[in-house]
Image 1 (cartoon, each protein chain N blue to C red):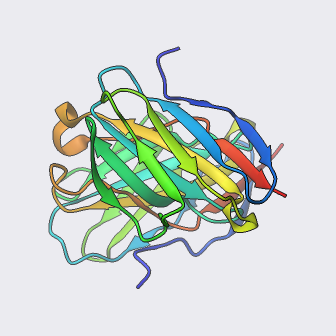
Image 2: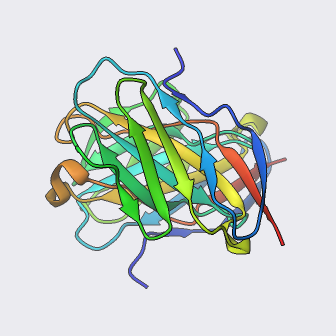
Length: 117
Length: 116
């Protein structure tokens, strides 16, 4: 069964607009972590933001925020005031279980974001 | 630069040849991971080490693949008798248990393998 679902293969957004990238996940664990990574054309996976399943507040990192809706099992990434340099593939990922015993990350299939000038 | 480094960045080989990739993690990170990414897909987990111990291997890691982390620092991933289906980006990541529940994997630039 697919654990991470990203339903938007590609998105086009005008520069300076906000954009929301969708992510839903499936797990029976109570303890898990959710991540978003950015992968530019160079190939490197760049960590953006983390949300723990027990975190009461939505995570924020600069222009990135994570809209975490636990009951709906969604963890959407919001990028405010998009910039040309935001054009890249974006991956949602999940780590199941307690960090001490289970560390592999499961990735979604990604969303290609293109920012129009 | 104190990030994760990988060498080589690109490798072209002929089918049947052996290849070896190296990953140097962030200094003092005790966990090291290998992932494989094919075109248009997200990375898929291959294996991971905690210090020098290999704790988990994916079914994707056939007997032609072997990974080592002999001194708990750098790691190597070797593919023997390469096949065209091995063509992919091989990503290495590292993390630290000291981050606790917020443990985050930081990735290297990857090694892009093309098997002809």
